[in-house]
Amino acid sequence: MPHIEILSASIREGRNSHRVALYFKQYLEANTPVTVNILDLKEYNFPLFDERLQFQKSPSSKMLDFSGKIKAADGVIIVTPGYNGGYPRV
Image (cartoon, rainbow, N blue to C red; front, side, top):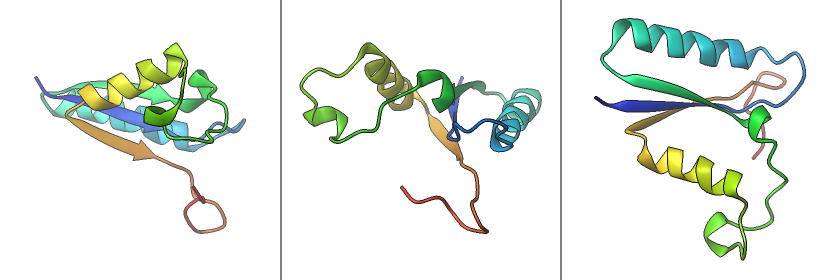
């Protein structure tokens, strides 16, 4: 069975976009033959990255876990909030 990871990308208090991620999870599970998981960046509490994972000398187990889940997924849906009518800067 295909597996989808939904990335809930906002870490702010009172975030609304996480509700969208929860909706997509519920909708996909009810209407498609896939398994779905939400990767919530707020729960991972990553530090700011100054280097890509492959070049980090000692990435944390959380980073490796997150990366492994993304790599193993058949698809990834990214739910990110809009700020001032546009996309957030990366």
